Length: 111
Length: 114
Image 1 (cartoon, chains in turn green, orange):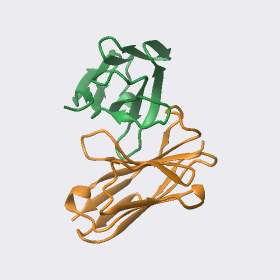
Image 2 (image 1 turned 90 degrees about the horizontal axis):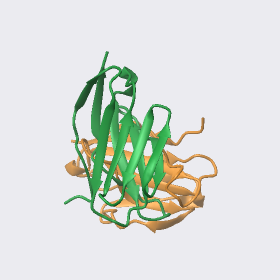
Image 3 (image 1 turned 180 degrees about the vertical axis):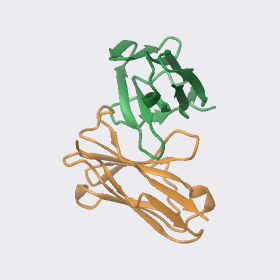
């Protein structure tokens, strides 16, 4: 079983809808949680970074971490066609920075 | 905006041949990472450098893969001999310190082994 599980999708939503993404994990030592966006043929770019449990909001993006359930979420409000990409969750146990990634969820926002 | 440079962008090689990838991190970034991303999967760490020293190469297949970061700046990842299963995107990333925050990824090298 993988340490980080993420539904690969694809997840198709109409423009303006809320996109809801999530990951589950098994290692309770994970402390730092991230969401990356990856466009086709590009490297991942950091969207959200959260330490420990709680919520974090940045513009249209909200990240939630529930360590008791080993569950993290990313919400994208007012989705745009430009949000069409693969979204990867990532997490790490320590400050050395080795990231464990989920498989990524492909999101398609249709006009 | 500062970027992590990688070359080549695409590489096709025959199995059993040698192949090399190059990465130039953001200036001043002490930590450099090589990740491998197989199609449909998330990236997996191959090797992590702190300056010129390897701090984690536990997932690097050392019988065929090698990595170096001479002078603690740019880095080269080599595969010899390449196998069909090595077909993947090879991503380089750098960060200013040892923390997970501030990772910047390059655009990657797409390797196809035929």
